[in-house]
Image 1 (cartoon, helix red, strand yellow):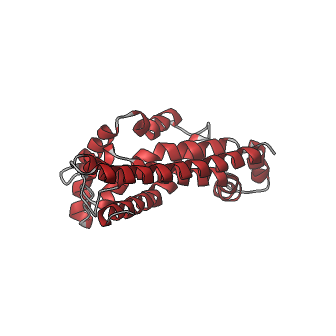
Image 2 (tube, one colour):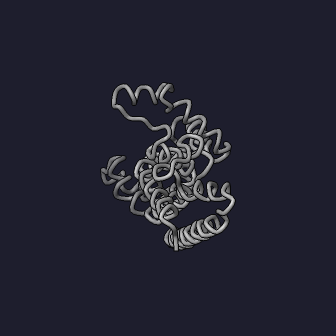
Image 3 (cartoon, helix red, strand yellow):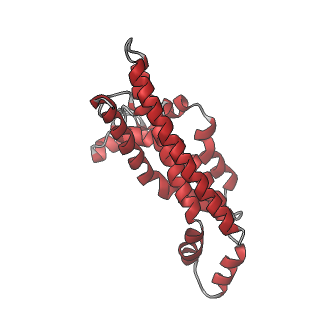
Length: 228
């Protein structure tokens, strides 16, 4: 049975992951679509930028977000003065940090699905007068649906498990930015927090295993569709 503070950390994690996916998923779809097309200008540079969070230490990513979106950063100051929006050390900032770290994983899942689509389908649609947007909405997106589902699940699980970028950019504020990993960290800092850390760790493990199982099922579904 979870204590109120532990339940609060779980709910915060779910809220952060949901907010992160709401913003990151459409951008991931667009980035994956561009990377799957060999004719995209600057494809190599785009690929490097998209996958940078995957190879950089999460703390470095969080620090970069702090430099950009902090109250004294160029983008953070602009948001604060024009829209009165502050991201650093807020729940929205935690979602931003988690979304940035999950972004390359989502792009990879989507890109594989887009690349598995037969190019002949696009050629046939083009010959029938379908424009680029029509081809994307009527062919690419429906056929990439399993990859889209896998991206959602992988991204959601990654957001739930993100630690370094979130604590660097959004801090560890109970009820606002304290997600499950941060709650585990806080419990381990307490002399009598071993049992709480164990409960939260088992909960995180169960969520991760369930997400990976569903993702694997969707990946197999995508492979079967591509093989037809």
